[in-house]
Each structure stands twice: as structure tokens, then as C-alpha cells.
Length: 387
Length: 159
Image 1 (cartoon, rainbow over the protein chains, first blue to last red):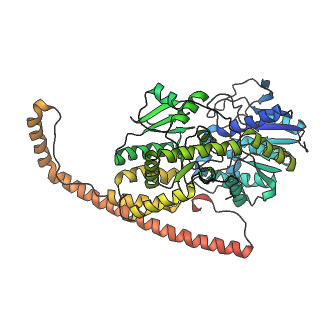
Image 2 (cartoon, rainbow over the protein chains, first blue to last red):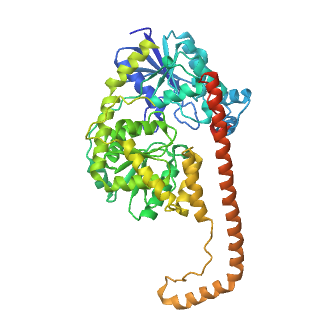
Image 3 (cartoon, rainbow over the protein chains, first blue to last red):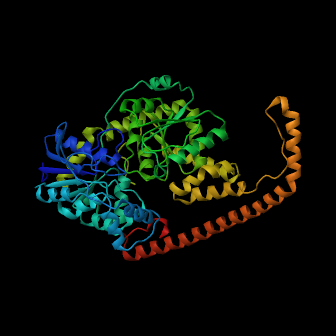
């Protein structure tokens, strides 16, 4: 079992319910696996449930989540307006003085009580992420020699700030979601290869009836599906515009089905289901002609892997090295640089059902081999031993 | 990129080869002007802000924009959906169009001039920036080579 006898996993929120972010889902899943394997592990998180207000809703203290102990700590008071003001500047690519970068983190989501508990808690290893949260930086400053950072790193302006660079330089090691994510950290922070391991997250196998979803929704036309947060950074407005343009130029009745949280501009060809149960999402994935992922900012692409599990091919933005990597490695999807590529790829996929079936079958086999919990646990145990 | 631990079998699809084949066909059609379409420019503006950071999307966008800058000021067929009043309404609309022509033509001509100048300006800026970036990248690569590799990556947005 190596040095990691007692492990703390730190996440901004306890990922229960369908509207939680990918990083929090990943951290909870890893904590649950560690607990189920008999490790002494506790998930430390805030009392917040909403990722906009970060209001303390849950009661501080310990609750159970299956085999896992979860302890909630209050979020410290913060000046959200100041935080957003500086965040906007950073995301514009502005180079800010150190003082402002520190103010950005200080007014982000933090929990001094959680850090105090970590200092006194006697944990051998601490897993925390994602990288751009004030909480994560605070944890890294409190216990750098014990921290295995789960960064969920993207190539975005926040990754270039001085406090983030320092965090990567001082932590014990990093658990990455994919090869391109590790390579990005090596490129940005000159991180030595031996200080990182690619672990990822397991995808539960499932079987669903591909015809159930379309029949229930009365969908006769082929459709693309996107599941996840709907926002400009994730590329959803781009996808809606691409599908609109495809329909106008090619003249085919292709629909777009969306699931997940966040606002969507209404359009007659868009079916917005909002946040749905896991089973409904899986049925939609199995029924979709293509799973489209227009985001450039991914460290793993959980929903692409889930769509592979549903035997549905993916069409992803080539701007995301991670998504392109997943599609190329699996043989389960294609990628586009711009609209003309999107149009050509989609026309090919719509016209060639045997190709779609082969891509889908390969995607499924890839996820079963690379992202089964057995494979992920093997990588996680090895990382805990080595780092 | 890391080497693939997952081998694609003979029955599988080499997606990299397939995408390369599709992209080559797209690039050829693009060079022939097939995608110079205002609708693509409209869709592609999102890709500029939040999507691909490479030059391909910007170049494709500017090509589409070049095609879209000219407002169509020629006469068009005036129709009316309300069948009963159609002949009268069409005559009234034609009259209004003819009366306002002198004004709208002047307006659209000026708009076309502005659009054309903006598109040319953007094109020039894009070319200048590409050249400047290429030179900077060459200098960084040379400096890294002299220092023995590694070092900090560039800030996003060229900053």
C-alpha cells in the first residue's frame, strides 16, 4: 500500500446530483473507489451546493456517502464582485501584478477551516483539484509535500498566472486525466515526467435500447447530441450555429439534442432537455447519430467516453488536444477544425452507417479496456505507490 | 502525444487517416471558393472567440467574410402572402421601394464601402499578426534550442 495509509480527497463541492461539474464527479468517484478498496479515506468539501453563489447550504460536519465519509466545511466570506472583475481581466489574457492574482484567489472559493483540518488531520496523502480554485491553491500551500494535485488542466489564461505556476512547482505530484493534459503541464511548468501519472476516471458499462429515446420523444430525423454544461467556453453556441448552418446549406433535417445545465438560445431544431437522469442521458447517447463535443477546454472528456460506451461515434473540436487524442486513440470519432470540416465529417457520418457502427464499436472497446474501473484503479494504486 | 496503448485492428477505422482525407478534400474545395459563404462566416465567428486557436479557422473566416461584405442592392421580386389584397399591396410596396431607392442605394453603397474597408483591414491585420507570430515563434524556438529546451510556454493570446 506504500506511504498512503490515510488519504484526504478535497473537492469544492460534494458531487451528488446530476448538475455537478466533471472535476468534482471525478474526485468523488476516486474517493469512493479508494473507500471501497478498504483505504482510510475521507472526502473533504465545502458546505456549498451552487457553483455561482457558493452559499453555505449544507451543515458543517461528517455525513456518509456509501462507504465514504464526507466532511463539510464552510466557505469563507468573499467579495464575489471583485473575484469576477479580476477573473475577467485574467481571461482576457491580461498580465496582472502578483497582488491582483492573489486577490483573485483570496476572493475565490476558499475554506480556511478545511485547510486547518488538513494540517492537523494526519493524512499521508491529499488529492485535490481542480487547479484554478482558490481552495486548491490554499490546500497546496498548506500541505504541499503531501498533495497529489488532480489539476484537470486546460490551456487557458488562468493556467499562466504566477500562483498556479508556483503550485505546480511545489506539490508532491500530479494525477492527470489524459496524456495531452500531462504534456500540457510539462510544457507550461517544466514538470518532470516522474512527478505525474495519468489516471483518469472509470466509466461504468451500460446497455440501453437505442430506439427507446427517439420513440419516446417522437424524433424521426437523425440527431446530434451534446451533454454537459452549456456555455460559451464549452462551445455550445458554436455547435448550435454549426447545426443551423448545416441545415441551411445541406438542406437535411438534422436535429440537435442538448442535455445538461445552463442557458440555451431556443431554435426550432434544438431539443433542450435540461438536466436529466443518468438513464435518460444514456438512452439519448445510444440513440444519437453522432455525439458532438465542441469544447476546446477538456482534460478527459467524460461524456465522449460515455457516448463511446453507448456505441455512438463522436465528432469533436480539433482545438481540444484531449478530445482529438481520445478519438484518434480509440478509432471512435472524427474531429473538425472549422465549419467546412464539420459539414464534411457530418455528411460522411450521416451517409455511412457501417462507418458509424465501426466507430461506435471501437469506441466502446476502447473505453472497456482503458477506462474500466479495474484499469483506472490499477493506475491509481500505482500512482499512490510511486508518488 | 503519447503513443497509443490501444491497437486498432484490421476491422477498425484509422480515424487519423480518415480525417486527413476529409480535411484534404475540404482544403481543396475551400481553395476553389466552395465555402465562401456568409452563413459560414456567421457560424465561424463563435470559433474565433472560443474555439480553435489555430490559423485555419481565422483564415477560413476571413475568406467567408470577403464573400459576405457586399450588401445586395439590386432590385428583387416583391411578393405578398395575403392573397386577396396581394395585387394592391404589391403595387404599394413597389411604389415605396421606387420612392426610397435613391436613398437606400446611397446608404447601401456607403455601407458596402465601409464593409469592404473593414474586411480588408482585418485581412491585413491577420496577415501582419501571422507573420509577427511566426517570427516570434522562430525566435522562441531558437532561444530554447540555445538554452537546451524546456522553459516557460508562451502566454495565451500571444501576450
